[in-house]
Length: 232
Image (cartoon, rainbow, N blue to C red; front, side, top):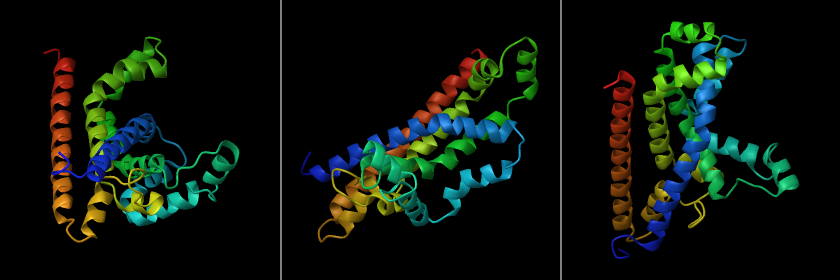
């Protein structure tokens, strides 16, 4: 195994899976809230929220990473107090890689869930509300089961995007082996040294295999959920 995949490459793979999973799970509740707000609520600043959510898709990833460094670095307006008061920092840590991946994947997560929510007939939610159900109960018992395929699709898209994140990650947390070196940054690192092409190619193949597996799992789960909703 070590002949085919060097130990540092295996470490980068394990870290990528960890970073992507944490980024997706932490982003999911915020993505649900943002998607529901954009799909169902009308309020001052609706357009601003929509723009902020999709900003990582528009900005160059390096710019997003630099903004994260300014915000969450030890001298940042958020990162500074976190470090001074709690001794917590995201910059140049694997948690920072998860934060960068989550931010970059967030628009895809929100978009998929928002489309699923907009496809749900609001009259179904209104009918449940007229029976005395609270808004939270309506969401948990009516909306969420109906949008579950969209939630799964969004989560898988976010996971795949997190696995492939490079620009914001390397800008915010650098490329530290064993700490912040994920698959994309490991591929970049191998390509910078003589004789590293083989290891880089193997990591590329692994990246493709993980992405295809995630998509296949998403399709299978979505079909299972859709069949259950339809009563089949």
